[in-house]
Amino acid sequence: MLISTERPTTFTGLRCRECGADYEPIAQHVCEYCFGPLEVKYDYRAIQRETTRARIQQGPWSMWRYSSFLPVTSAEPVDLGTGMTPLVKADRLARHLGLKNLYIKNDAVNVPTLSFKDRVVSVALTRARELGYTTVACASTGNLANSTAAIAAKLGMECYVFIPADLEVGKILGTLIYGAHVMAVEGNYDQVNRLCSEVADRHGWGFVNINLRPYYSEGSKTLAFEVAEQLGWRLPDQIIAPIASGSLYGKLYKGFREFVEVGLVADAPIKFNGAQALGCSPVAQAFDSGADHIKPVKPDTIAKSLAIGNPADGIYALDIARKTGGQIIAVTDQEILAAMKLLAQTEGIFTETAGGTTLAATIKLAALGHLDPDDVTVVYITGNGLKTLEAIQNHCGQPFSITPDLASFERSLARAQTLDRLDWQSTPV
Figure 1 (cartoon, rainbow, N blue to C red):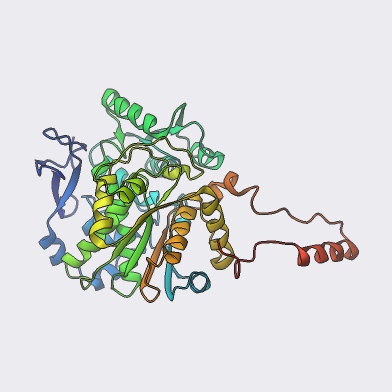
Figure 2: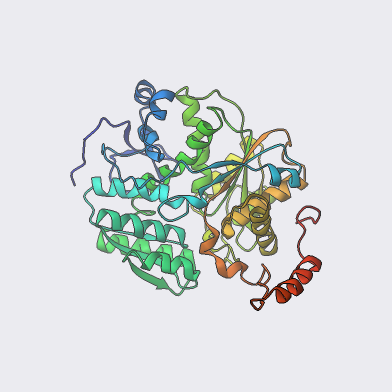
């Protein structure tokens, strides 16, 4: 396949993360020698020569302002305005948790499909186009399906999406609307992923999180780049991020380190904390037990977008948490729901269950004294609550039904003012 050379490239190929074997920048994700995962190699001297803070700030108001750190050759990557989402100073929530410098990185409002997956798919499908693919696909727990379908539609690519059949309706409809072919598999995500590996081998399609995975995963780094820039070109002191496969967690670490390596920010320690739902917490279990391997589990949680029982990058997440002095903890479904409500009622941010997992972990970390209240703390919210309405539909109360007259309103007003409802200012979550 022909590779575009429309602009000078700063990535030089692929390298095995385990044995160091080098590969050409093709669609391949596993080492032929040791079966380790392949990652993108960069020429950091070239990046340093062409990248300054000023040049980044003169770039597009999207994740592509960091294009020199991404594995594409095209001068015109697929840019739907993805990225540069708000970094919200969460003062009301911070007071509730006893923290002073709390920020929410809010990818619940990312475009085009309201999750951080828009970042990784933008990179994957730009690279897929460069490699000559016309049909793309993915294995997904929901958000990736939405993003792949939407961005494939923009590029005019044929798209096949494989999902567990029990996904939330919002995520299924949010994929079908773009015209993708949706395959609802009777099984969990790990079973879906195994099927997709076979399909990729049989049909030769570009699977964003299989044969295109080395490029796809690099898009997550932009969540680190943006936070550093939005904090005034400095690193946060501590972060909390969700862990599903572990890829996002690892790429956040890589992104911050790349900014240090090329001199865009001063080096400083960052404590990396990870969040999992108790019903699918293989990485948290390994962290707690001190193990250096991940024991697969069968997912059973409302946080379906984190429900990966055999996380491909779990061992790397363990290493990052341990060497940075962070924690990886699990939270219950009830804690997830309470955290979703708390975030909405303090900061006006409606997150999906994955974000509820991350905030619930933040609440627990703060209560256990693992978060320094004076440090700059960034919580990554990765998806929108409109996608997981089923999870909260019986946990938010009901509207008052009134007739169109003042007397009816006054009766309901009296009931509303005496209702025993959640008081987030005084009730622990």
